Image (tube, rainbow, N blue to C red; front, side):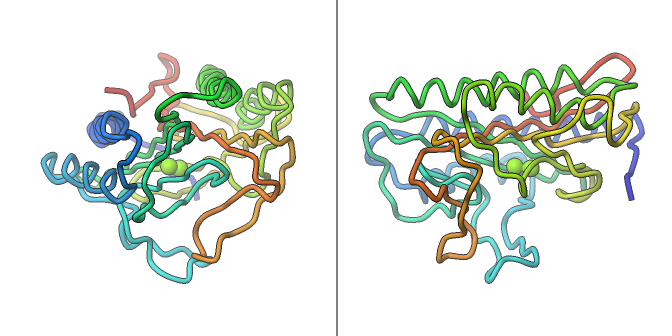
Length: 255
Ligand code: MG
Ligand code: MG
């Protein structure tokens, strides 16, 4: 069931989104060669705690997961696409890191992700990251009253496919509100003019993820959480929580 949010709910979700944005900025600022992923999680925990926010990630256990998620961020490095567990791994020069973070404020959830490099970036990684950001921007622009879900997926896939990147079919965005994952699903590919009609008060987490090797294939790590490319190619992921409104798309997870 799709829940359409009131304007008051959109304002409340904006507060959750602000905390997510701050946590992601803090993590990005803390990420450097030699820093452990676990330290990045601790940095995000501090932001959430000081904001009085809870984490929708910590303890989350969907059907596929063998154990509850143990952290407040996902940290996915290089060939990890999404859902990486922040552990004792120390960041190395040139790593491509994708950080996903959520926050719950007054019962409303925000969800966003960013990819970046640490140390000396490889040009191909910068292109990959820039493509996910461009795809996200195009998808946000497509999230207008009267459009359909397929317009969002089409906007994302047009950028990714033109660049020759892979797009995993089984993972994408989602409705969001009092729960992190709500209906409707927001696929990263779609046919223009098809699918769920977008209307005022619909809130979506839009999250393109591109695989540099060009294959759409992925596998699940032995930890039961981390999704990786099958060819070892690197992946990038960008996400915002976005409200569809009569005044145009409202990105809730910016500072
Ligand atoms: Mg997310
Ligand atoms: Mg999400």
